[in-house]
Amino acid sequence: MPLIDIQHLAFDINGKRILQDLTLTIEGQEIHALLGSNGSGKSTLAYVLMGCTGFAPTSGQMTFKGMDLGPLPMFERARLGMTLAWQEPARFEGVTVFQYVRLGKADIDPAPYLNRVGLSPDMYGNRFVDKSLSGGERKRIELAAVLAMKPLFAILDEPTAGIDMLSVQEMMNVIRSFKEEGASVLLITHQETIALMADQASQLCGGRIIASGNPKDMAEQYKQGSCVRCDGKTCLPSPIAK
Amino acid sequence: MRELKILTDTFQSLGGDPEVFQNRHIAHMAASGHRLVSQREIPGVTIDAQETGDGITNTLIIEKGKHIELPIHLCLGITEKTGIQRIQTRLVIEEGASASFLAHCLFPFVESGEHRMDATLEIKEGAHVRYNESHYQGTCGGMVVVPKAMVSVGPGAQYFSDFSLVKGRVGQLHIDYVVQVATSAVAELTSKVFGRGNDIIHIKEKMILAGEYARGLIKTRVALEHNAQGEMTGIMEAHAKGARGHVDCREIIKDCAIGRAIPIVQVTHPEAKVTHEAAIGTVDKKELETLMAHGLDPQQATELIVSGMLQ
Image (cartoon, rainbow over all chains, first blue to last red; front, side, top):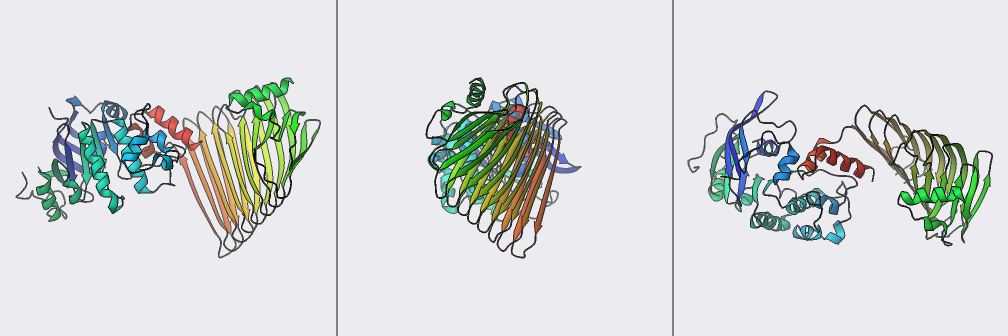
């Protein structure tokens, strides 16, 4: 049984179809890259999967470990072992970095998790997760908090966006460590070089998965821009896609 | 003395260290109603306090160039179920001096009471003051608190004020502060209040950046629930070259509470600049959902966001 099983998922907003007939499976301990250009529906899929307010599916089914996700509110999905790291992490006045990293598991020592994302616990632990931190710093903190949850399934929305070039490799190592610790990752990205680290990859276009397969093929197809101008109706899967 | 014990016990229950009133290196003044219950001067700090019919009048002076290491404690309150306390206070921080104040205004058992404060703060050239004022007004909602302050921040001086009333009930709170900021001086006013029940909160803070390169910030954080009502008015004026000011108001509203924010900015010099931001409404959806994605239920997430904002 796959860890995540999405079958014929559709999602409409204001009468407009954003996700259509979307089918995707993710196995245990799999890093699955989801490639797609801006507006292709990658983040929407993340919100629908996580159960964000206003993102209930129009039709289709989603299961986690065989369990129907439909009736479960977001926090219950998180308590089952799912989580989401937003592309643009929120700011929290008055909440320290240590507090934030402990959100999911109150009894852990947050310091090692900060070290793993390249932040000094001494320098950052007592700072607030507010606008005094840069977007890149907040992304690292978010990643540390997700690691500390020890999830079974983490949706990472553009985890390397806003991270300085020298640290991207470091972040990729952190993403790999999820798998080493038994978790699966849905790695949302529009950078084909990042997708290459995955075990499997899918390309999303116009709200549909147009191809799935090995990351190298998917990255190559994505790089060729075969679907960049697609309107969701006229796009056709590339010949190399499975 | 019974009143002092009630005040120090309340102070301790709110996380304070009652030993500060015994420490001979810490200046303090404590008053219950119109009774002056304890007072200590230390080198560099003079306190002249008198009882009046319904309160206390006092002048506290930090001598020129003195750096007062430990915070000066001002403990004011009413220890009975009813009472009136009117405080007239004048704080003078002389040239180049520095000090921090911890003011505790405690009304733990009041069912019907009134506390009025008329304060003038004179922060002379190059002086540095941090003034933290925390209130506890019991659980009845029967207090009416009216603090008024006129503050002058001299050239190159720094003034940081932090007002906090986040535990228990507010009752009625009517803050009215005016701060005049001179050349190259810095002033920051921060207010954090949590209103519940039928509490009424009015905060009016005005900052006048009169001198060149003066800097000012008015920051207000208010949470309102049940039927509480709040109105925050932040007025920032900049009248000189290089003056910079900002008004930042955030209110979180729950239940049937009503919040209003009125930022007023006025600039009369082409090289001055004032900005403002105000956000009123329910808890931010993204903040809430971020916390829920970490397993907090909606109530836990809301509590964390509100307590963080009022931190």
